[in-house]
Every structure is written in C-alpha cells, then in structure tokens.
Image (cartoon, rainbow, N blue to C red; front, side):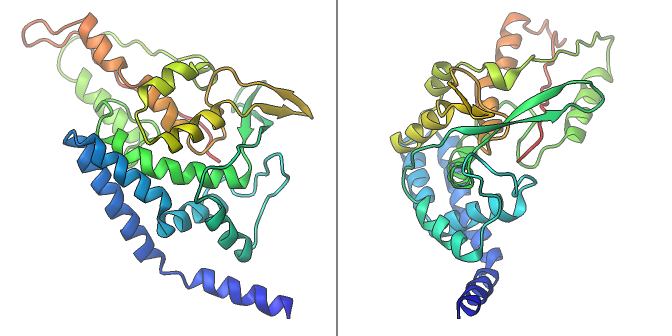
Length: 275
C-alpha cells in the first residue's frame, strides 16, 4: 500500500505542467522587472510578496534544488541528500513562510590545478529551496538595475559575452589591460553594507539576514559567520553581485572620459561552483 502511494505521488509530481508553471512565474518576474525599471518601487514590493506566496513559484524552487541543480544530492547539516515526491510536496508547503535557518555544513573542494582547497557552505535542502524562491523574487528587480558590464551569475549572460565585450573595448585604440582578482570576495562581503543596499519586503530581508548569520559547522565545530555570503548558497551569487554593483560607476567617476576617448572600461565576470 505504501509503495502504491509513493508511486502515485511520483506520478502526480511528473504530471505537473512544468512549462505552464515556468511561464506563469516568468510572467510575474517580468512584471517585477518592469515595475523596478520604471521606478515603481511599491508595486515591485507588492509583486515580490505575491511571487514568494505563489504555489507555482514554490513548485519551481523545489524542483530546481532537488532535481535541476548540480549539487542537488549534497547534504546540509541535517544529512538529507535526496527527497521523495511526497517530501517535495511537503517542502513546497514548508517554504511558504519564514523559516529558521539552520547552520551551513562546510565542505572543502579542491581548486583545479592548485594544491589547495576552498570552502563551500552547504545549506539544508529546505533552506536552499527557500533561497531559490526568494532569489526568484529579488533577481528581476536587480536585473533592471545592474551595470551592463557585469556578466557573472546573471541570467542570459555568459563568459563568452564578457569576452566579446572585452574585444569591443580593445579593438580600436591603444590600451592597457589590468586583470584583477577580488581575493575571497564571497567570504569578505560586509553584511551591514549588503543589507543596506537591498530595499525589499521586510519578510524577505529577515530571510536574508538569517542566511548570512546562520553560522557554519565544520567537523562538528560551530563558527559564527560575521561576514561573507557562503559559496554554496543558492542565493549567494545574486547577493555578491548586489554587493559589487556600483564598481563600474565608481571607476567612471574616478576616470571620466576625455572628449570622445574612453579612459577606463571595467568588465566584471565571476566564477564559482554552483550547488
């Protein structure tokens, strides 16, 4: 009887009209983008609250972290790696409201071509699903505002786009190229500064603060997280882009154009292993 019930739920999950779900969520995200782009902040906030309550948006968030994402079988501190269709439906309901964030589980990942490792902070599946939901509400607003020369972790943009932009910048006149790496960017972002830049519904801001302050368990030892957005969180790339937004404008102010000559072009691209 139990196996029959599990099979039924698996069938129901597979029969969800995912194309329709994606269209509905994208339509709402497009409205958030347009409201933010036109300066209708109050409308954008209302639509963001609507999106995080949307059943379709919650379905999509759960599918992304339990089926689509590369790290879908990576466990958080609760040890949960994979969940059944019944648990997916339960998760869809659980992420509807604010949750108490659990600490991250730290894992060490070898760096390609280097004899060293970098840390990833892995949230629980439930926290990842809620993060995916909140990200789907915040990202359209910030996509309407981000600088055009940032390419890392943005929908519809890739490393090839960054390369093409670089080529356009150096294809005309004499130039110097400075290749700069922001050391431990994700680890050192100031929480207060980051949160001060985000003007979103208060319930979503509480979520963000919880995830930033959740702490890390490393071999059973708890550590506070006083700075940084952990590499391993679904929403971390978006938060890093928010923190870094403004670099191009600052550089342009420091080195304004001379007549028709562009003094400086800043092109930003980030890489990180997704979960």
